[in-house]
Length: 280
Image 1 (tube, one colour):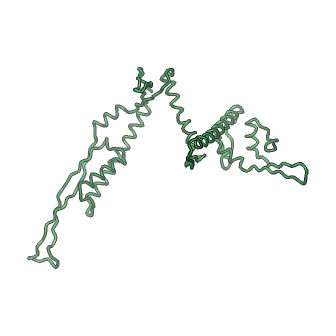
Image 2: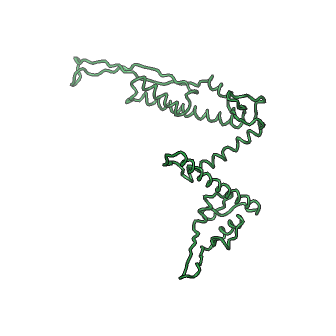
């Protein structure tokens, strides 16, 4: 990993740092090679369709559109130069019906047929290769060093993973509310739920580390889970039932489903007493 020694200032006043990652450079090069390969195969297939006896490509505009779509789908419009070649094809047919003879007259028809040739855009590929692995980071923090800024950026997927749960686990959208304040209130409630979920996972994982527990049998068939999630914990405890039975005016008796070994272990790790679980 390399970084430009001088900080640049963005037009809006933010710090702009340029990095070059050797790993990302290899990924960019491999991605470009895959795009070129896919485009070459797709253009070759299109050429075969153009040269077929029953081709429907009789107009140059349709051929150009097909080539553009192929290059767009393969993301290789910058790397492949495709040329369309036109050829006139002459065919003859009888002017009248019937069996042909010496006096039969024929009409000549001329139709255009198209073919494709292509080559690599060497200049564009060379220009892109010089930019492989290069990416910028923009920040308003004046104190972070280049290394600290990169580490902060590396944590972004963890934050994005949490917010992605709004759309998956919580299914927040769509929101059938018109008042902005109500929408904000609903999202705030979901945010607090996400925060509780995050704290629960952190507390359990830290407790596992302190207790030397590498994993818990939370997956089906008691398979080990090294990083328990709230979703899995809810499923593990979903079988727990709590009933209150009252006979006449007597005191209510509380009955709770007998806990499994895994459930008792989780409750202890969270600092609770399995004997009093569900009774209060």
